[in-house]
Length: 162
Image (tube, rainbow, N blue to C red; front, side, top):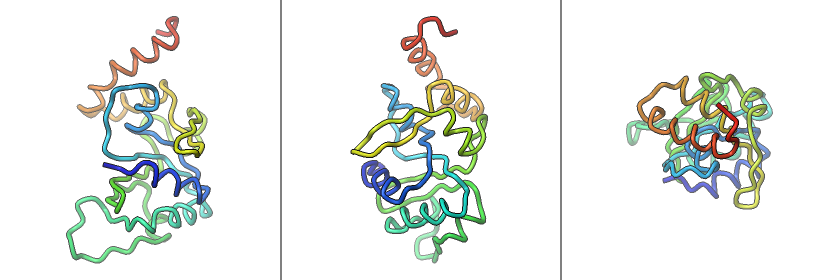
């Protein structure tokens, strides 16, 4: 399970531009959804990639299911040369998304986010409408399971919403 406090505090301390997009975002909306990882969309700017590298390097990221003992170099060029990553770290699983299916990149995610204060730091997380769009676009069985709850939460917050 992800040590969410260590992850978010490190990202915030390094001024990383990111928006929480997965199960943690769903949980922030008072959902009962349980997640074991942290998924976020991040700005692909050169400066932000440097800050992201600084924030995550202490946690020794390696690709999920990477063969044990096989060397892996986590550096800025790694982050520049690909867009999406599924990492195992010393604090748990962290998925980095340069783009979110159904929504777009960091700017679109940011425009569809809400700010929360968690562990003393301000973070952005997708709003309910954006979560519904992205979970529908992802079209995975686990996403189908959470969609009815997301619709119910949206209706509870705004009974006039369809």
